[in-house]
Length: 344
Image (cartoon, rainbow, N blue to C red; front, side):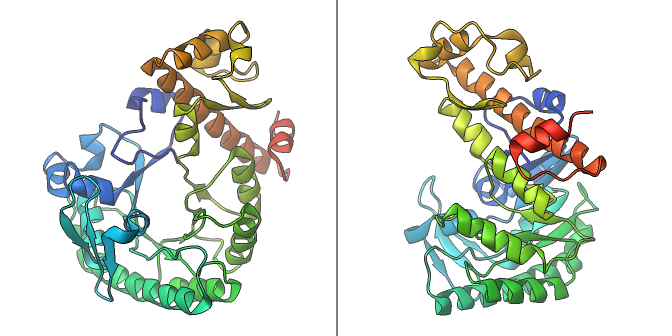
């Protein structure tokens, strides 16, 4: 899922996202709550109509963003008091208010409100955080069941629960089992990519997914590189999101079938080749590496747009290759393998 935090994938209009084959976008409740405001979006027909996006949308509850505020938040059993990163104004999120906001935004998939545990953290802290997330999940589910039909802009929403437990395998198992018992439509693995080594991320994902039911979507939040998303799909993850393809693009880091390219380097100043000769996106069909390097070096906004379009295309093509490989009954354990084995 490309990340469209503020109802926009930075620099890329919706018709281009449709052309690229994007099936679902991710938006963020925290940011939309602050600007333009949930009520404003609701008045304008809900998130789909507001951003003119007819395909699916998933909204994160805002728990991770509030977690990222660090000194600007205070957590209690009832919820989280925090200060806006925009103007310092005080606000409060509870499981109930986070679900209410998402119902009114009208996303297709909405997330339970959770607490993301910092890394590193001792086991007592991780357990307390996991226990709080389970209690918040129960409150999120109860509120959703009582109010899910009150959203005229999206009457068929699905609520996903989030598994936490830090880097503790036993707590992850307990969190998964207790979250499943609450009866969510799908399950997410949260609390990763918070500073832990990549090998630890892999270990936690592999250990957690075996406890999640295969007949409901399994969503890994906030990952990853192209190599990682192939790897996690191979483990059985169904859904992923990450800011990496868009954020890296804005810094001139581009993903290709031949490896990563830092387009800002002078070696590309006279390179007439396409960015990726194996890519058929609108950028690779039309522009040379030399031109893309010139745009970036000149500070042209078009550089960010074209770089983002290509990176999104590469990620989406990678996932199409993964799906094709699965349909053919071929396993894949690496990015190069899935590309080579997924060819008809």
